[in-house]
Length: 171
Image 1 (cartoon, rainbow, N blue to C red):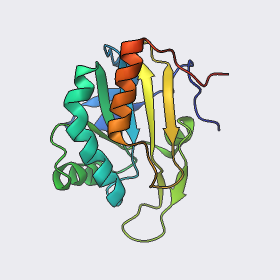
Image 2: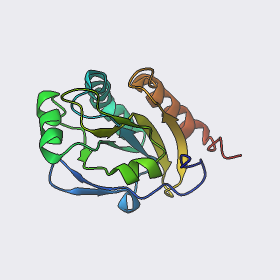
Image 3: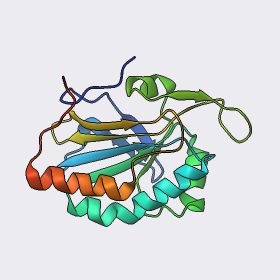
C-alpha cells in the first residue's frame, strides 16, 4: 500500500499513550500542525537519540503551534520503559500501533532479527499533518538511520508557518 499523499486526509491514528490517555488524530486541534514521529521501539538505540532530540525541541515546536506525538508498536510495558529509561518526561508517547495501521501510514515493516527486537515492527517515519487533518509532509525510512534531523524539521516548520507555504508532493 502506498503512503498517504500530501493534500489528502491522513489515515486514522488512535493509540494509547503512556500517561493513560488516548491520542486520536481526528480529535486534535493544533494551531498549525501535528508532528507524528513513528519510531521502531525500545530496542532501537538510534530511536533513543532521535526521541531525546525531539523532546529537547518540544518548546520550539509548541511555539510554532505544533502538537507532537511519538508512536510505536511497542506494548504498554515497553513504552513505559522507553519513557522512563530515555527520560522522555514531556514527550507524548503512543504505543500499540498495529501492523495494519503501520501499513496504512506507508511505514516499512521489519521482522525482528534478534532479542530484544519484536517479531514485527515499523521502521521510522515522520508525518506533518495540517490543522485540517490532511498530510502536509512525509519522510519515511526503510532503515533506522538517515532520518531528517530534528533541528531541520523545526526549521522547516518555522519556514512553512512564516511563509504560509503550501503542501507539496501531491501530483
